Amino acid sequence: MSSFYDVIVIGGGPSGMQAAIEAKKEGAKVLILECNDSLGGILNQCIHNGFGLRQFKEELTGPEFAYKQYSEVKKLKIPSVFGAYVTKIEGEKITALVRGKEKEYFSKAIVLATGARERTAGEIKLAGDRGAGIYTAGTAQKMINYYGKLSGKRVVILGSGDIGLIMARRMTLEGAKVLKILEIMPSSSGLRRNIRQCVEDFEIPLEFSHTVTRVVGRERVKGVYYAEVDENLKPKLETEKFLECDCLLLSVGLIPENTLLSEVEKNIKKQIIVNEFRQTSIKNLFISGNSLHIHDLADNASEEGAIAGRSAALFARGALEELGEEYEISFSSAISYTVPQRVSGCGSFKIFFRAKQNFLRKKIVVRCEGEEIASKFCVGITSGEMQEIEVESGKVKGPLTVSIE
Ligand SMILES: Cc1cc2nc3c(=O)[nH]c(=O)nc-3n(C[C@H](O)[C@H](O)[C@H](O)COP(=O)(O)OP(=O)(O)OC[C@H]3O[C@@H](n4cnc5c(N)ncnc54)[C@H](O)[C@@H]3O)c2cc1C
Image (cartoon, rainbow, N blue to C red; front, side, top):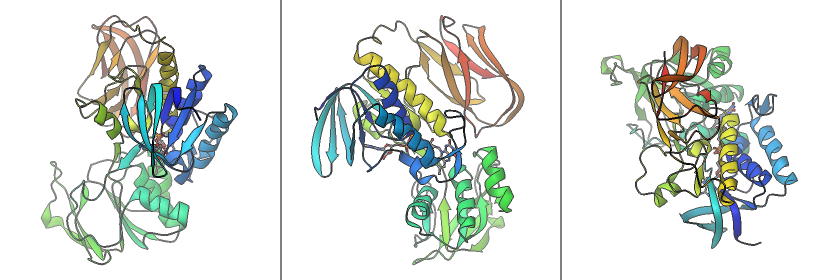
């Protein structure tokens, strides 16, 4: 197999697969490098339904969604190298460890689609013992869905993000007792449908403004202390209680897996800056999916992969080089971030963002130098769901602002 490509996609999850599909459709010579032994990424362990409503207009399980994309990858004859863990990107050169051997690949354009990793007990400075029985929710999901191993019988879940909610239902269906879900914030960051279908339908207690203060159990988890928190998220120790359990699942956030990019771009800030083509400040490097920002829906990660893959193919054949001036996108205090953060406005594009809190009956407005260029009325905006607004081609003449009004 030749090592020279137009587009190499690193990571074969839904975002990477779609990037490869679109790049190939643009006529590029494409390769996928994937460290696992199959394509699909996190979808392979998500055996619940709720995927694909946007992209395939039907409700699919994670593996079914992955299989549909894989069928397209196969039809287009896009090669993949499995067991290929990419360790370095330098210009057009990619270094990967392939089953213990270091290999080099070269590509005119690169798409990074390496997904996200879960925040661990250490990262949230969880106090107390570290006996067996403390797992991230995604690890517990893999154990049960891949290997048929239940991580505990009396379970406390910390965090009410989507993975925590989905695991509350999964553990219950497998015969475990989910005693409580504790959420430090006053509301859940999970999708409304997951709260209804995974928690309320099973009458699992979900306590907001509460957190675990200490884990007890040196060999095996014996229980947790938990307490209410104040407005600064500090536990009110006078409310502390003990709950006997043998397992604590952590669903306390995902972190974009983009260390490969931060190795190349030393000045990278907390969030990676991209334009509407998902092109980073390193011109031949594109990024999409959870490695750029956390997506609640695989469909969105895939849509973003399509943009990055198509753009990378255009770049490889020299068609994306002359973008002209790029303008910054800023946002009001109700919004936590946007993607993209800068635009050339060459064609129509969507701005994706997350609101900091929930709103009812509001308008999302995009302005260019004070003039309204796009708006959308929303009955409800929730902090747990990614929002989007489309800006038509030809409207961008200067910097943009996005606000909720
Ligand atoms: C528990 C859970 C439940 C979910 N439920 C839903 C749902 O009901 N509906 C829905 O639409 N979405 C759901 N999602 C969200 C959706 O699955 C994700 O948004 C989507 O999978 C992200 O796709 P991705 O391609 O960016 O990342 P991933 O799927 O994580 O894929 C990244 C790929 O990159 C590979 N990789 C990483 N690093 C390297 C490297 N250095 N070299 C080579 N390869 C590498 C990984 O092995 C992996 O295959 C859920 C997610 C989780 C975790």
